[in-house]
Amino acid sequence: MSVFDNPNAQKFYIGGSWVATADASDIIVVDNPNTGAELAHVPAGTLADTDAAIAAARSAFAAWSQTAPAARADLLDAIGAEMDRRRADLIDAVCAEMGCPRHLTERFHVAIGIGIWGKTAQTVRDFPWDRQMGGAQVLREPLGVVGVLTPWNGPVTSVAKKLAAVLGAGCTAVSKPSEHTPFSAILVAEAIEAAGVPAGVVNMVQGYGATVGAHIVAHKDVDAITLTGSVGAGVAISRAGASNLKRMCLELGGKSANIILDDDGFAGAVKTGTIATMLNTGQVCFAPTRMLVPRHRAAEAEAIAKAVADGLKVGPADAEGVMMGPLVSAEQYERVGDYIRIGQNEARLVAGGPGRPEGLKSGHFVRPTVFADVTNDMRIAREEIFGPVLSILTYDDLDQAVEIANDSPFGLAAHISGQDSAQVASLARRLRAGSVYVNGATMSFDAPFGGYKMSGQGREHGEMGLEEFLETKSIVGL
Ligand code: NAD
Image 1: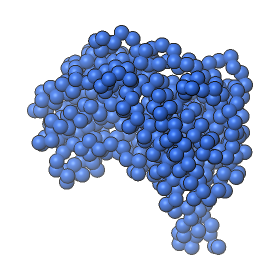
Image 2 (image 1 turned 90 degrees about the vertical axis):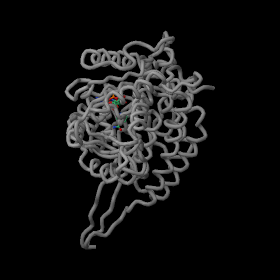
Image 3 (image 1 turned 120 degrees about the vertical axis):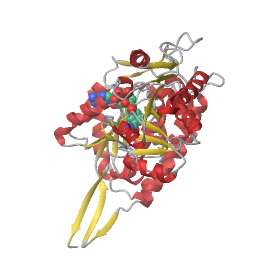
Image 4 (image 1 turned 45 degrees about the vertical axis):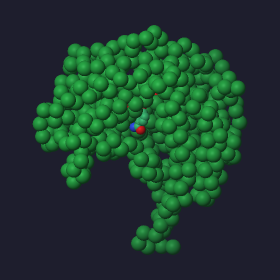
């Protein structure tokens, strides 16, 4: 049985059981982005389904919040093992619902989504739950019921890392996966059930942001929201969740600068930066989409970036040698195409362009695209495109490079390539971004991850990721 014929895909996981929706009249049709044709469908949750999931999470909180952290850590390990048993199904689900090439799906989506449980388990074991501060005993305690809202671009990793932190903290969850990628999320819920997590601790309802998502955010019995998504959703959720002062952890968009220094590593850094921009078809929040190069090396950067972009094989997830799959949806295809046309008016097209790559007649495929002569006031330099589109900008000196890098509404990440470690370290301190990746380094699941400015608030991963879901109690005079 494939994950798409799985009977649980037609149900929601509420209170420890797979239950039918209260009203089956609305469905979510999920596309296969490799073909553009319908893949399968799931029920669209209703407000009644959402209420039932929130009630189950609220009722499970009393007992779950009193469990010992070590016991919770053991359960997280068990979920990781159950995820591992579903590795092949998870890969099939992501290849079909998102279109990411199989070898990259295995490495970036599924292996990380499995590994995050064990990593979080260790964080829970090592965490200082009780501390002495002066004369006071300071306790960290579970916050309550958490609404978990996730996007489609990391469908396994985002659901897994949020649920691992929520559960590890001793909180209970109502999860609403992206409407574009429900199937991999169902496998995560099945792994949680198989690991023996008590009924009601994790609940999952499929549905749209405007209905199920908004109801979770507005609900008085939900104490916190963790969202990974767009800035628009982050702002809307912040407003809607204010009525009961919900705690918000918001992981939003980015437009990360990539400062490449003028040294012997230049050519390799341009190549790595171009590949990183195209990875996951550019649907990566911390992708280095604004490449900053010394003005006198612009032509060299262009030539290298063009060669990389032209050489990337684009095609369906299961095609031989494919490095870039389709965008997730017809909507994203239109959106990215619009930005490429905007770029043609604003800057100079070096590689790619609008439309599908040659030979691909259907599916949401776009061409790896590079623009040169980009200045930081252009829309393609200021707005998140969320597609495989690289902008090359120039700088005259490092002060100007820092100024351009920081002149952005976003502050999720920045990238620097250079061989002089002292110079790189000093630049890293001047950048207004939540993470700085040096010489092609990528996300660390041990270090906090999150944004400055419009890229969000709060942090994921490790100790700080756990703290998002904890209250602090001081007992004085004991
Ligand atoms: P999105 O904002 O459209 O949706 C994210 C989730 O929120 C979905 O489950 C959606 O249904 C739900 N949602 C949307 N509006 C809502 C509302 N008003 N109330 C409640 N729920 C709502 O984002 P997307 O298109 O799924 O994902 C792409 C975006 O995510 C990009 O902007 C990308 O940069 C961002 N992202 C950020 C990170 C990060 O860690 N900072 C990681 C991955 C993706």
